[in-house]
Amino acid sequence: MSQVLDAMFEKLVKCGDHIIDQGDDGDNFYVIDRGTYDIYVKVDGVGRCVGCYDNRGSFGELALMYNTPRAATIVATSVGAVWCMDRVTFRRIIVKNNAKKRRMYENFIESLPFLKSLELSERLQVVDVIDTKTYSDGEQIIAQGDGADSFFIVEMGEVKITMKSKSKGDVEQNEAVEIARYSRGQYFGELALVTNKPRAASAYAVGSVKCLAMDVQAFERLLGPCMEIMKRNIANYEEQLVALFGTNMDITDPSS
Image (cartoon, rainbow, N blue to C red; front, top):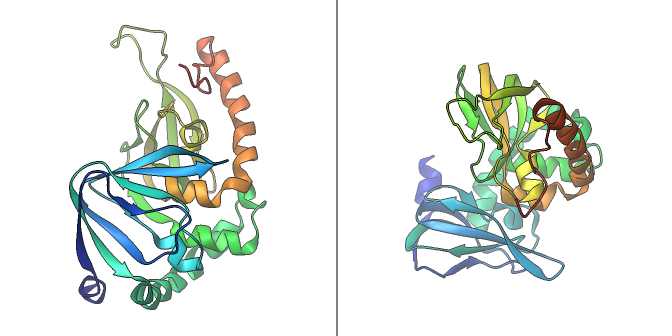
């Protein structure tokens, strides 16, 4: 750990500064010390904000790992600071450590049916960018109405998905309804990333839970080939919501 800290240098940023620009060559890996930052991805020539960092997070690793252009633009929306590690040092320290993580998660990732459309090299990239998160019984993982910043795959335990109806104005009477449970190998949190809308449901740990989490930038960059599978799942969500609430809750309507 001290080797990593010694290799990093601080960079102060002003509101409006572009930390990285999509399409550029990668120079540094960045860890946020303080400040807020928007993530923009250009699709068909049009840039759109796909997420944000709020005083925490890291970015810039993909271009350094795979010698590819930057996959997104990161713009500071406040005064802040980031810690930087140059390309050569990053590859020497981080990529070596990633080999251990690959050995740990390679078989698990390759066993997931929804990733079968990815090439082997693409699945290995997924292993490289995932983080492990643990939760205790009853702990909230995502909250309905919040902005979406991550996608989750259950590695161990069970996750309960609940939803409150949008049509009930009385908060006290609007109790959350359990709509699904997910176990090892299943995923959740993709809906808000696919539709670019706030979280449509909440997720809670049932017992001890371990999840693999992927941030929105990596999700956009790596899971494009899986997007059609995820979009097909939206129809199943909508059918389930109509049965429960009498409405699809406008989960895909961008004007809602």
